[in-house]
Length: 117
Image 1 (cartoon, helix red, strand yellow):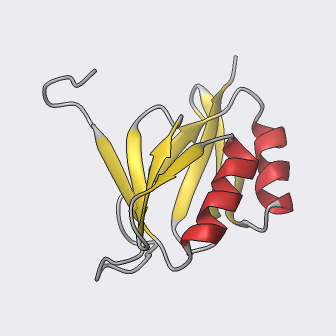
Image 2: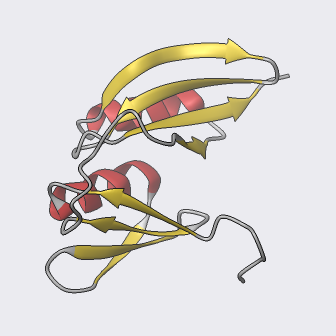
């Protein structure tokens, strides 16, 4: 369903679509659909999206931060490390939650958070 003025689609620059699919599939259980040699659609992430290896925009840690939700923050961090992701900001508390930041195989920085009591 598409809602007026909602975030509908997120594209991540990619340097290696195969590595991106393996990483996000293993860690978060996402599935993918290839659209030619340079584009991969993301399914099951809660918002539509894709990996774009043809874009002139290269991965960066200075752009918008995509934050994923986890019911089990420690398990998500362990899975990210096991899949080869790097932790860039250690877990920290904030009012109502806890989160950490990581990089994927293309060096995009994202974060994962969970609610706390």
